[in-house]
Amino acid sequence: MTRNPPEFWTDLDVLVRSTQVVIDRPAGSAHPKDARHVYPLDYGYLDGTRSSDGAGVDVWIGSLGTRDVVAIVCTIDLVKNELEMKLLLGCSSADIVAVQNFFRDLRMGCEVVKRQR
Image (cartoon, rainbow, N blue to C red; front, side):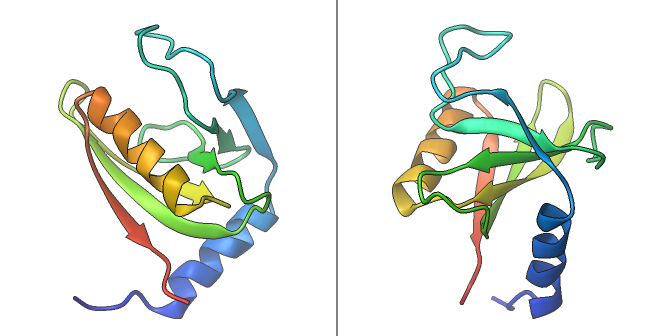
């Protein structure tokens, strides 16, 4: 496995620091299309950014109380035929597992890439 160049993570840090995080789905809120699925953490996006779906870059805010980029989660949604990358900010190991379980419960593929420090 090759390591990501440090510039990738530094660029993500700059992106997060230079934009406002908007939380549109607080922890404990139901998924808009299926109320059986509840967001385990705050979920939102970086205002003024654009992801592959045309909306803002998605973020999960973890329990560590920081906005540090600790990992990314790459998802595949076969219903929408869509691939996306979401940022995990201030997420503990338990938070990361909760995010993975959320996507798996939605029957979406996901892979986490943790930042190596």
